Length: 124
Image (tube, rainbow, N blue to C red; front, side, top):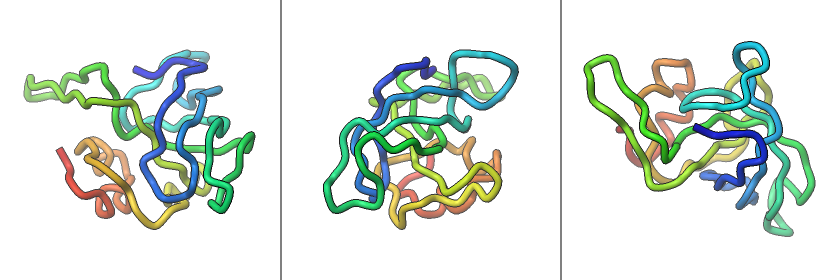
C-alpha cells in the first residue's frame, strides 16, 4: 500500500533511485496504491548521467510493496521494500529502462505488464 508523498525505490536502470508518489491512477480519488497500479511520481534522487533527472515527473507501476496482498488462493505476498518501475506512458505499459532489478509479483503479468515480468529476475 503506497500513499501519496511516499518515498519509494526505483527498480530499473533509468538512473532514478528514489521517487516521491504524487498521484495514484485507479478508482476515483483514492489515495493509496497496490501492486500493479500505475502512479505518477517526482524523481528525488537520480544519477547525473541517467535517462531521468532530479525533479522530473515520471509515470510508473508499483511492483513491490511491504504491505501484504491477499491472493485468490488464500496466500499472501509481501516484499522487503516498496518499489516502482518507470514506464514510457500509461497506454503502452512498456518500461523506460532495459533492466528490472529484484523480484516482482505474479499479478503484474495478469494485469498486462508482460514485458516487466519477463525482464525481472524472479516472479513470485
